[in-house]
Length: 325
Image (cartoon, rainbow, N blue to C red; front, top):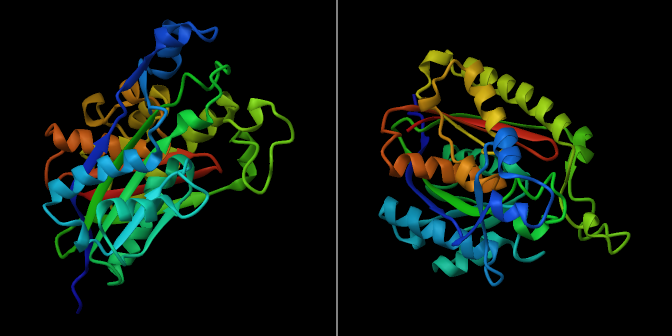
């Protein structure tokens, strides 16, 4: 019988832009308050990319960190996947731009767009490549400059988002790694969280609302809590595990209330949940890999522990990954 091949994490990296925007800074430009934002979201501050920084710039810095931890050369990568909803260009893909920056040539490189679930989608695709033997070392990145599609006059959305990038290096291994991934989508919820225009659907007016994020927060919250609870159960059942088998929850960092509601349903303690939303805000596809990187680098997550990664985003899309780190 052939031995199972796993996708094992051998390196992680993260990058946050230097500019910090606090809730108090936002009080000066929209009708809001630090207390209101903290109470409803748990967010205290967010990072914003400099005017001359692009998504690829952020992705590059996170990727270099991951390569250093993995102790491999970029030429060893045989697949590069970037999850982003804010690419540098319509084409070529941000992954191709990143490939050139890293000095890799010939490895396939492409982007995935699943908004906040993008990294989990990308991780799932990378895992299939490794399991089928089509790749042995894969760079998976989640990177965003959401500030570029944020309406800074809309107090309902501008308080929520930030910029950043996270990366992981996966390697084919006979040691346990990614145990399973689960990804889903339901496009009927399109207008609850979206940007109204795009490349083929031009803005109807010069109104900034046509070109920036629009969200119906209460509706998104309700669906997100139920969906994340459901996919956690789906993931555990698929692996013959129970809630008590989990060591860590590494969730998408959208809202503290959503995170804690999910952790409570999984019967996890607060100190078993990786939380970065207070300092990072919602960085879409970058949030899960940045949280993972932080908890690995500060020593909280240890080899041999079982991690549940999960995310929920516009589309709606949602997904999970169960990992033996």
